[in-house]
Amino acid sequence: MPAHLAAVSYLVRDYDEAIAWFTQKLGFTLVKDTPLSTDKRWVVVAPPGFGAAGAALLLARAANDE
Image (cartoon, rainbow, N blue to C red; front, side, top):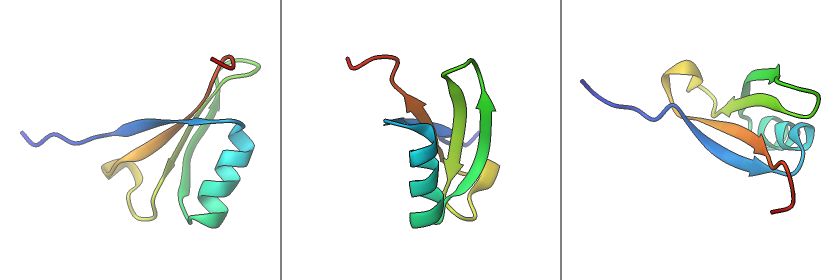
């Protein structure tokens, strides 16, 4: 059975800023943007044409400066 990589976490400063960068500048597709709490979201972007079948980036915002 072939294995594949579903998502890689990518640390970002701000969700909306990162979404804008990946979608507007790099042409990525916003796959999912789901609120998890008041300050956390599940945000996934993928290169054009990859969708659910290819690798994607999970945009993660740090909980603190460390």
